[in-house]
Length: 362
Ligand code: PEP
Ligand code: MN
Image (cartoon, rainbow, N blue to C red):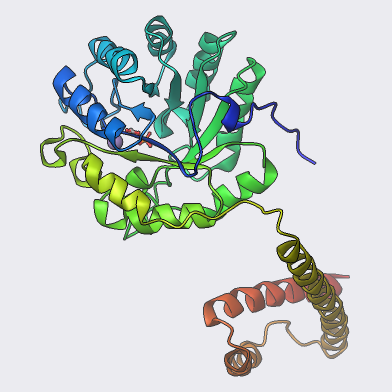
């Protein structure tokens, strides 16, 4: 079992109130006092409790709008005091942390580019030591789950207990549809390794445009994420950063209301009985699968020994092609997806070749 993090449950952070999903919303960047306050007021009216706004913006090219800087923190403080919102922003170094602490910011997040840099994460973690501030860690830009976990370890080691993660997708050369490739399997892995970690999804930076935000948000809720961080601007067409992916506060709430929230668990005894029975069936299927894989491998070893006796090469491409062709036909009968079946059978084939190779090299 992995070392678990010592984390305060999200419900005890004093910022998020039921029902789920917990929503953090606000503009990509705080642009002016008026823009931030107006957006914040509209979000408040829609029932949002936690406001986000970037103060220091990590832009790809110099000369773009790089955030309002410390002046913007005053506007966040004003939104907090006048509207009763909890407020959060991104920090990328210790100086940002000190400025935020001075201004009573309730929560900070570490951006994807910063999570990828252990020096900066360490500096931030040390600057946060002995504070009660909440910290969310975005996944690093590259799909490296250990780098993500390492950042959490650095913060946890400094006593941060209001700690959680934001899944915002990864840079990928193959991804065509989304700005950042979701690679859900990485989030699922992190979530199953550390079930105590509060989990948010940022569908805005994942999608890169408004159109795909609802489907990504729903997927996150289907996977049991605790909440969403979504960008919202009073007038997205005028936004100084990430204009295409921001919703007006009204549209944001329409989107949130259209989502189906999945419960994490239930006390319903009928559900519990049925799910236990279904899980027992899965367990016995898995058992049968393993038994059959074991027998298959034994036959494969036998073939290996036979090939060795007859001095025949292991790979027989024609045989493998005809096997796969037959497998696809059978897969159709059982309503199994070809791509999935190809992955399974290629893995089985690879393991068989390895075993036969061992035999031939004995
Ligand atoms: C942001 O939240 O505005 C931001 C810059 O996000 P990311 O670090 O995910 O790119
Ligand atoms: Mn943004």
